[in-house]
Amino acid sequence: MTVDESKALDYAVQVLGAAIATQRGRDALARLTDDDMPTTATKLIAEAIRSMDAAGARIDVVTLAAAMDDRGTLRRVGGSVKLHELSAALVTAENVDYYAALLRGEAGFIDDLNPF
Image (cartoon, rainbow, N blue to C red; front, top):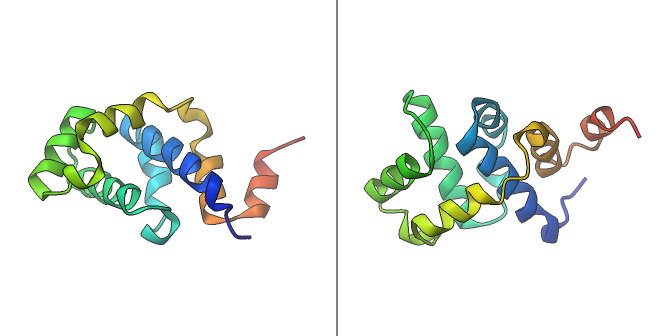
């Protein structure tokens, strides 16, 4: 199943927002590849979060912005304001596995999660 490009960014925002906020979100992000991310900015943010998580670093908007600034990628994603917007756009981290499955195009997994 191919992900509808117009929806892929919405799904990525939910996964990345959850990854900033929770370990469960970071675990879901770890199951995605860069190819699952719809834009260069979402790829760069995902890479930074994965790197910080692998290093055991604490992750929040401030520490993520600092890490991305150190890597020279913060400006490429729109600065710390964009990271704050990303974090604020998170509806709930509870659905992160669902959004990750949508990004991967796993229709069967989605059907298992949706009882309706």
